[in-house]
Length: 145
Image 1 (cartoon, rainbow, N blue to C red):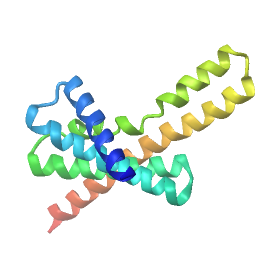
Image 2 (tube, rainbow, N blue to C red; image 1 turned 90 degrees about the vertical axis):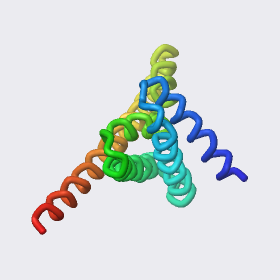
Image 3 (tube, rainbow, N blue to C red; image 1 turned 135 degrees about the horizontal axis):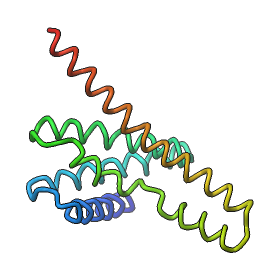
Image 4 (cartoon, rainbow, N blue to C red; image 1 turned 45 degrees about the vertical axis):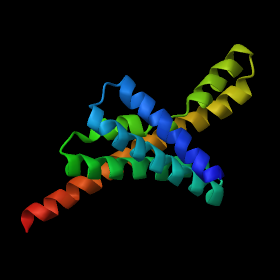
């Protein structure tokens, strides 16, 4: 039951941001699927590994690969799916708590939370970059054949 709830809420939040980003109507549901599946990879990986950074990396890698796949299938830019799809993975709460701890003069907690937030953001970018490189390398191999 918890997995279904996680899927539905991540799907809805991704759709909300796809609409906010003015995605084409036909792409909104697919962007929602990209975000929801990416979040499910994050959620399941976190349950197995108990690491926010590694789980975020695998979730972002999934979002990137699915975004590239849907971009080719539906002949749209991959950023349409990836931008909305990474929204559930973005460490907004981490950035908020970092600022809160700084305001409250809790510098040790701010540094800890800030570094964790930075690594999560880096994991998102690395997942997207690696999926893009993987996608382009497959495209090059197909063009050589």
